[in-house]
Image (cartoon, rainbow, N blue to C red; front, top):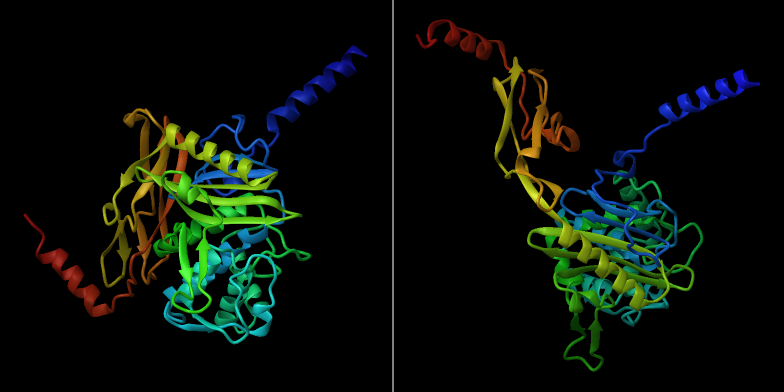
Length: 396
């Protein structure tokens, strides 16, 4: 009997020693926070991240699939901004409301069938008034139909690695098979914030549509934090009886931009106070530490048989890490991991290495490094001249 107990105990110890440790990478990015702190206590699900690096500061059931209500419109706004960026849509383009778009219930800007507004005005209607009708009108303008637009939404979600999400419409009105998670909402919020112009819409507290007409429409932002929380400038509220009160919010202070998502809150007051508390915590405890400025050279890689003999690895954007305030500078180190040589041809955007940042020897985060431009394969004459130069013009 004693022998059997000893064998069982040894097996238990072995099992514990090899039990998988779930790292932040499995949650979509680095993690620096303490999930035991009392944040978002009334929310069914929540997450708090740094928008620059994607570092998770706090999460609570962040991958639970829940109805997102009007937070859905973050993806609608993202596809709209991307269409503007790629030139297929302009802010001055006219969008005409179909009968279907005008028939949307819930939050709306009361579009009449056949009524036209600019993309700029429709974006105001979506971002500030959470207009279900404006969302569908934009979807139809971009994709031809809401159904085609929803397909685009799901494809974009897949590209962004949003594994907890499936969209069935473009505005978040209750419908079967329409869900997301706090984690995925933070991911698409972070992507939307890469379009700097979006906060002109999401951060405005009030504005007008149809100004100067017989039916002026006063817009007041459904996200009251943009007025009452210092640094808040977005992003999107949501409510249905099924989803309860939801919010994807962003605020920026001293160069640090945060994204907080709460789902399933009991009322607007709790929703706003819990998001404010999440922001207060992160702004008081964390700061961004710059590693490289945009354009700064990180290292060089030799190129075999290329039109250029070497590839310069430079930071395409500022490379920062999120750290606790007061951290010792010498505890943060970094290392370039890249091959000594690469064979031509090399394509722009091709992954050629990574920069790993450590804190006290522990990997904190990593940045992928890509080729800034194409390097074609060199012809024999170019290679001959290069070899000759090395043979005859080497410094003595």
